[in-house]
Amino acid sequence: MSDWQPSARELERREVRRTLRRRGVLVATGATVVLVGALAVGVLSSPGWPRVQALFFDGFHARESFDEVAKGFWINVQLFLICQPIILVFALAVALARTARSPWLVPLRLLAVVYTDVVRGIPTLLLVALLAFGVPALELQGLTTSLLFWAGVALVMSYVAYVAEVFRAGIDSIHPSQVNSASALGLSRAQTLRFVVVPQAVRRVVPPLLNDFVSLQKDTALVSSVGILDALYAARNYGGYNFNYTPIVVAACFFIVMTVPLARYTDWLQRRWLERERAGAL
Image 1 (tube, rainbow, N blue to C red):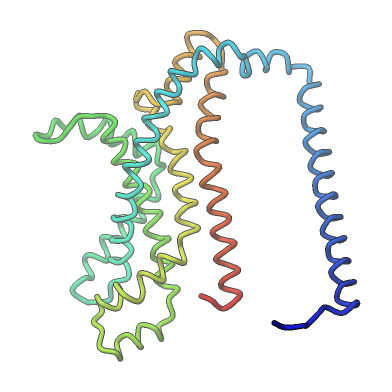
Image 2: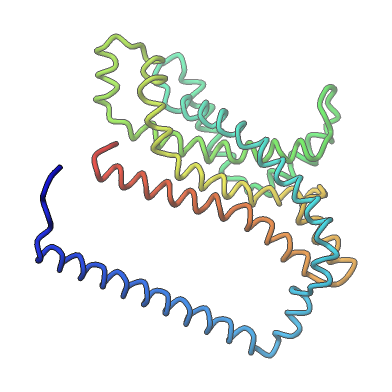
């Protein structure tokens, strides 16, 4: 057991740091309360607030539409849970194709480049409409005509293009010396990718990947544009019959409850990664 005790000077420094920390928390809390209060007063005192409250924040319509919106939101959740792992697998494959160096794989690399360039240039909403309405219209034998299936395919195609670029950035960030070291140890190109490059690249891009999946959670609402009964469609359907937009706010609350925890986890993970990097652990 060490008998070291902090000096009086060190204790004084600690007390000063605690005082500054408490002062900072008080200032931040006060500034937040003032800002939120000013915004609330500004909105509640506006001339049109009573009408906005009746149209968007009506308790009766919120309760009446809650079950239908919740039922539609389950479609959004299922779509997200199915699309997410498929996107990860295909995006990593596209990223590996784009980083391939073998002359035999040049056609595959060109195909991956064209795919990411073209698909990223098409708005996801248009891609959903093109596939959900276009593919069933072809009447191809053996293919389903389910709107939900083709809307999900459109989401996968769109996000694969974006996530593949995230993976590629992670792969390119690995220093060439590590690849050369793996080669000197006798590892083949495939073994180097599997055991050296990809594990490090995936770890580095986890925060931006989670950001993309936060966006995917929200973009599942795009399937309502082709008539699929998700949360947004149910909210608009109820609002159209009752001339009230409160169900849209209810649907927005469902998405917020689902996305905020993942967004906070993403921020925590990114902060933790930066702290470890600065400490030299990565």
